[in-house]
Length: 154
Length: 150
Image (cartoon, rainbow over all chains, first blue to last red; front, side, top):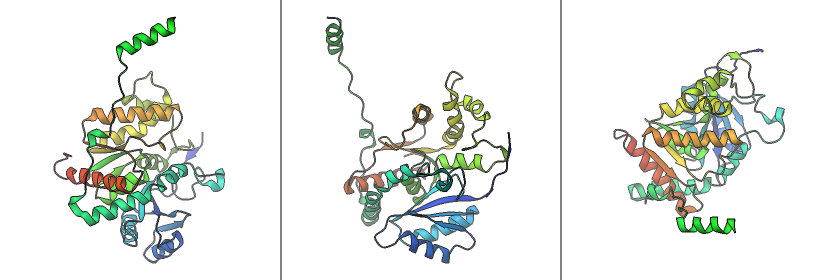
């Protein structure tokens, strides 16, 4: 067993996704560098990874969100950028977790639309009934069960 | 600011919306980050050590496979910490091996048993559902400021 010494201890890493008709990841990276103030920024195909002290990252994220509020999305990341256990440069193929991002990336346009519309409508936006979301499975009728058993036996 | 558990725990959309509306999303990244940044024995790729299944005994019985208990060592403390939860019920991206599948079932069961306010949704498939999705989450999260009731 080898000892493990963590890198980037005490830092926070966040993903920044941009799905915008007006801004590419490259442009986002350039503008983020201007206000980075010591936060490590890595440009990716979908946006950025930012790493730094929690307060500095929060400040940078708040600044980045103002560039295009309804088209920029942020989430936490457990690993620092370029970690050999996750970086595809070492593993080959898509990074673990990328396929989940890709799946949600296709839905982002609906979320963008939702954010714009909710902001426009204010408190008037319709809210679906939460109870209707969780559908109960239909119960198998006891007579139908009996018929199935008899069919199986014959 | 309330701590809101998100399911799928790796969801970009839920993580963003919870943070955007002023709360703290509790997802898998927080648990993984804690392990990645803690010195100890090298145990790649996720720094899940043999100690994790023991910690998982707090959330699952000893008969439950070690894979589920190990995963629950990450998610269990987050569920305990959570003051509310947002669940997407048709998240096809939350698939995985049998360990992941059973852990997901246990996470949802634990959340529903915990008594915290829970919002259950489906991913939007068009603009209209997108508006409803965002509005529902915004309304749910706004209610958390008033004493935790949704």
